[in-house]
Image (cartoon, rainbow, N blue to C red):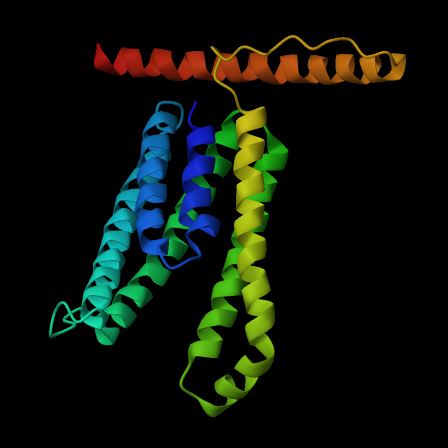
Length: 236
């Protein structure tokens, strides 16, 4: 359906990119996120916005990768002038920070939208919760970056909590995407048959879970059929 690819792309663009080759890994991550958003756009039109944001983030990642290459060549004495130096990188870094907020906001909005239409309330609520965490992180981070004495003084105490909060909302987003992969399925997805447990209470729990899953699957199938019928009617 696309959530599996979105998970891989988001993981590459965030946690996996925290290293010296981060910009190049982000190129891969946002490229995969773009492919995932195109697949998900078949089921909910709000993912069209995520496609555009993925392309913007991909472009910014290319600009940062170019800066890394320029710095490497300059430090290796291969070129005489680092034309993509600190000023360039700082400017692109600020642009990336702003677009990253927009990318995550659009992604969470798209997930909330498809969760509401498929009646998976927990995922919809989790998307709003994650967005609140992101807003708090950006507010604190920007506050610490302000060129004022009280901001610099507060940054000494807030830097560690802000860093922890950064990893918290990334992990929460990854968990959310994994939940979408598990609970929002295409009608063509087929579940593997599970071997019965030796414990009767486990089998009863599985049976109840499968009943709830079947009802949710039926609602999702009906929703997807309606969306496809509307799209076919527009084409006619």
